Image (cartoon, rainbow, N blue to C red):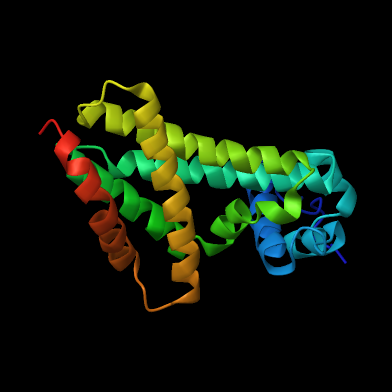
Length: 205
């Protein structure tokens, strides 16, 4: 009972952006643990500590929440990749640092990476389009990087090389998940040994 004569203190409301970020973080964990089909909005709401209607108020549907998770993971991966190549001066160093950023993301942000690679379970949903947009983002970043450093006038060749790098590194990252002893640095070394031999002769530096 309040005997002080003062009105009870009101609990401070969490800013919308912060609450949304919290919901996405929790949902990312649940989707990674359960898979999209088995994940429930009830469990996500309970873990966040909000009502299920509030989840729907923010994201409209379970698929909308999944899309938000994928978009957040894609933004984080893009930021990590772009930061990694700042200050690099050679094609070899830029490629190495970009690959290391990717493999580090896959290892350190396993739940986010899990969402980005499980497209087979999401075929037929708009989430599949978001996953392809993530792949396109990374391909475009690599193509831009290659065109900046490599002496390649054929745009189709540049795009083909970028597609090859992204596809190969996705499979290598999955293999690393299955072999815990393979560190991001080791994965980067493997990728560079395979890729740089073919790209070295195109380098401008």
